[in-house]
Length: 244
Image 1: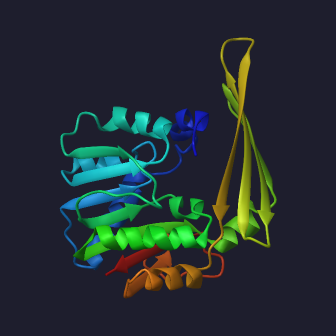
Image 2: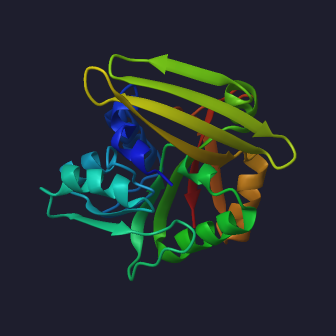
């Protein structure tokens, strides 16, 4: 779960165009002839995507497991009257309503490292989705987690921030372990250090499809990230579109 890292998240993810991501989701909805009024965003993080749904008038409910991430999302979304923000977990969330669209982006699904828990998540989504609803999510591909992130170390040195990102890929369990060490400038002569550990499960497309079918979904589509093309062996992000 994101803690201190939450307050650096937007800074470190500045290269991601969330408005473009939002427009891609809108394109998916148009392609599948969906015009949802109510949206549930799972693992909304700091609310970067949520902002665009809120801005454009959707009835938006969003939740995250991390209170620190939600505190930042709250500051982004407080001005909107069409947003409900909750502290819940993807695996066992409960909201007393159904939604026309359920969305999860930025490989949040990979953080569910147990297949039984992922099945519970998908069943939960099915129970919260309207009969004519749409479920959109993405994953970091198996290829990306094993071959690109893999057992590599990444270092970045910015003016007021230095971090080391060490990775270990567990072949037996297909788990990618991330060890992050941050040094943040506090004043001219001092940096503050903190460490975080994160894990993502590397799922193959067929594993995701199998779990979705077990959860009761009948129409499952998947694409190379941000396109409507078939994934290749070297696709780094896979986007799923799922209908009841």
